[in-house]
Length: 233
Image 1 (cartoon, rainbow, N blue to C red):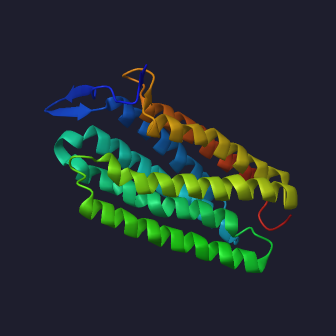
Image 2 (cartoon, rainbow, N blue to C red; image 1 turned 135 degrees about the vertical axis):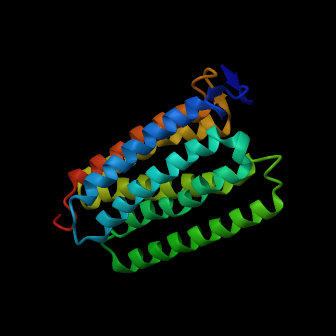
């Protein structure tokens, strides 16, 4: 186990290409496939309720973002820092979709509008901060700086929406909302593994551990959606 620093990146020759961190590409692709599959299943159950559509959009966009993230790792030797931008930029609205999927269930109309405004302002603010970091952060030397605004956006957004609101709505609306709260708790350790650079082994590093937690967590989000018939309870 390695803590506080990263292993040297694994390399996998594929034809004339040298893929970096193939382990991360593998777990990112699995996470992407599961997220896209969950989104497609929701897409096949059309509904007039906005929350359902926001969650469908999240699963589909997060699946795309995860796959782009895997490619960004694998092709880093060719694309450099620019290969990560697709994943980072799609992650920002994906978290906003989670927030809207939760706050649109708020029974108090005044609170709902307030929550919606806060979520929108936060997304715009994170986008501006991300742009500033890309401009001034010297990302070619310290690429992890570009991910920090995304990480903060994700931790705050998921904790307050799926976490806090999931717990509160499980008391007020329907017990299935508790699965959002459980999903948040399952995802939370991924932040500690990633930010503290806790790497179990070279072929299953902090990224892979994070992907496992996140994948299980979003399955719980889907379980909550299936367990709650939007608008009828």
